[in-house]
Structures are given as structure tokens and as C-alpha cells.
Length: 457
Ligand code: BES
Ligand code: ZN
Ligand code: ZN
Image (cartoon, protein in one colour):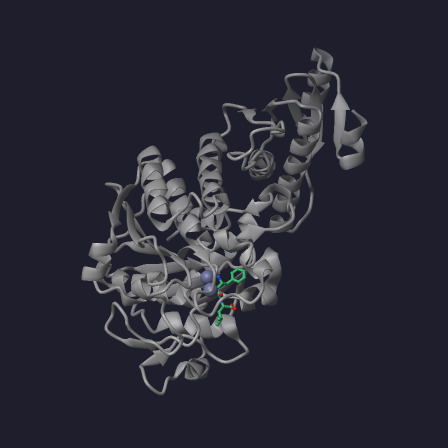
């Protein structure tokens, strides 16, 4: 099995016999950073990292988990057991296991032939506390990835709501789906204006996890952009290519649904509400025209000058809808701007915050811990001036520069509570394989939010 040595010099191939295991135990007792791994055919040891930088170190461990996963799939090995006798470095073993498990995802629903063989049967030492948690969290990430990878031919706005409600039953959170009639009676003009050019109705999902022993009195509300396909509307996207990935424009919704699944699956003692406004964005006959003025859910008016800036229209209604909960904190997730992609690429998330330094620090720390790194952009007042409209309260686009920030300023108009906005346009959908994050839908934000909420004070 030379491929193991060429792929990762840290991974050694060993025969599986009692003597080897005894030697390994001795090495580990002597403080060596090795981790024995047993598959249905052979045993390996993996050297974990010994870096000082905790964030980098954990990520290196996850990467090694991913490399082992690749090597095992190449050898068509599908069962793997991981064990170690560590004291004090459970976090690294956990990160390694996380990389190994997260790497086992493939979206194969529409493949009738040539399904790749993958390691998918994991056994972790029972005494490890994190095993059940890892299993639930990975399932939640895979659920989010599935949603993003589903094409619009299956995943309409109504189907998105149904899929999330079904997951609610499996993971234990509750859900209520508002249909078009209800959305009309609530006067969600932003969501309805984006939906106007579509032949499919919109949906609005309200998800809730409310355990008896919740630590927070006022809920935390998560809002996710659920644009199931973004053609740009009448401001049609310029080239066919720029539309290719737009089934992933509900990555924010997937993040919120996946987070609800992770916290319910792991029974976190927090009251959390998820809101998902959903529709496709199309240039149908009744489609919103650039220059149309829309009456939003909160009563303000918006001049739509570009129908491709649709995410903020549906999020605005959800953000004003959130006010009724008197939330402690609202966090929204959206594949909102190309500007965010250009600024940080696929390897980071831009965020803007009106939630205070303490919360920012906690979220950034979670970002480093799970390696979904965050970069803060400002919400300076003067950036909002770009949104002034001649005819309405505000317009839906700013100038040619600072597009991620002006989008954030637009959203801020609809909030009156501690709030954070995450623009996940870069990392939500990966066009090339990026380690254990995989290819296609990455489920970005689920591990970040789970970690943040787990440590929330
Ligand atoms: N869904 C797009 C943003 C996007 C772009 C996500 C690339 C992922 C990859 C969003 O609805 C959009 O089209 N935004 C416009 C806004 C502009 C018209 C103000 C953009 O960023 O170009
Ligand atoms: Zn758009
Ligand atoms: Zn969009």
C-alpha cells in the first residue's frame, strides 16, 4: 500500500497483530503523538500534529483524516476503526476523526452507474465523548450539503420547505411552513417581488428548537437566504456561466437548516428559531421590473434597480419578521454578493456585526476552531448613503464598489436588535475539491454555528 506513504508520510502501514498493538500502546504511553487505525483489512498509525497554533494544528489533523479517507477509498476499504490511548489531546483525535468522517460525503442521488466506493462505516473508541456529537454534526453537515447539491429541478421553494420539515422530524426540531397565501397576508413584499416572475410559489419556513432547560430567555434567531435558483430575474445574469452554480443560492438556508439539525440532534440547551424565506428568481412575465417600487413587510419602500440583488429583498422581510420574537441575537446567512467572493474567495466568510465586540470575538474564535474563518467588514454609516433613492425609502443596490458592505447596510435597515450578517457566497459551493469540505455544497456555517452555540454564554 505504497500510496499511503506517498500521499502522507505521516501515515504508516502496519500489520495488524498483537505485538504491533502492544508496541503502539507503549509508544503512546511514552507520549508519542500516534493514532492507531484499524480497517477491516489492515492497521495504520497516523502521527497527529505537534504545532503550537491550535487552529492550524486541528486543521492539519482534519486534513490527515481526509487523506486517510482518500487512501482507504482507493483501496476500496469501507470499514474503519479508530482508537487511541490519549490523555489530554482528545481535541486532535476528534479533529482527525472529523476530517475522516466529513470526507466520506458524496452526492450520488442521480448516479445510476459508477458510484465511487467510499469509507462509510466508522467505529470510534466508545470511551470518546465526542463520538455521538460528531455523528450528529456530520449528519447535519451532510444534510446541508445535500440541500445545496440538489438541483432546482427537484428543490423548488416548496420542496425546500418540505425537505427541511422532514429533517425536523428526524433531528427533533419543529417546523411550520407558510404558503403563498399566508405570505401575502403578512405583506412580505420583498419575498413576493422576487417570486413574481416565477411559476412556482414561494415558501417561508419557521423552525424552532425550544428545550425545557434553555439557558436563554429570549431566542436566538437564524435567518437563511433560500433562493433555490438565481437567474438574476429581468436583470438576467450576463453569461450562461455565471448561472451554472446558482442552484447553490440557498446555501444560507441550508446553513440554517443544518444548524437546527445539529443543535437539536445534540440537544443543546438553547432556544433557537430558524427563518427561511424561499423562492426562485426568474424573468417570467409578471417579473419585477428594474425601477419598480416594493412595499416591504416592515412598511418601508424599496426601489428595485437590479433584480439580481434579490437575496436582500427576501432577507429584509425575514429580518423584520424576526422582530416579533424580541430576539437576543439574530444572525443571517446568505450567498449574497459576488463582491464577497472577490474579496475573500472560497476560504473565508465575510461578516458584518451590530452585536457587540464580545459576540464578535466568540464567533471569530469558533471560526478559527472549526476552520471556517471569518473576516469582519464594517457597517460604517456613510456606506449606507449609497442606498438613498429618489423615489422610495431606499434602493436595492449601492455603487460599483464595496458591494458586500452596501448589501449589509441594506439588511441593517430592517433590524432593531443585536444582529450579525454572514456573506457565505465564496465558500458555500466549491467548484474544486477542497479536502474534507469536498466538492459542491460544503455545508459551510453549520460547524461554525454549532460550535458557537455550544459555547454560547
Ligand atoms: N446570488 C448572487 C451572489 C453570488 C454571486 C453568490 C456569485 C455566489 C456566487 C446574488 O443574488 C447577486 O446576484 N448579487 C449581485 C448583486 C448586485 C446586482 C448588486 C452581485 O453580487 O453581483
Ligand atoms: Zn442575484
Ligand atoms: Zn442570489
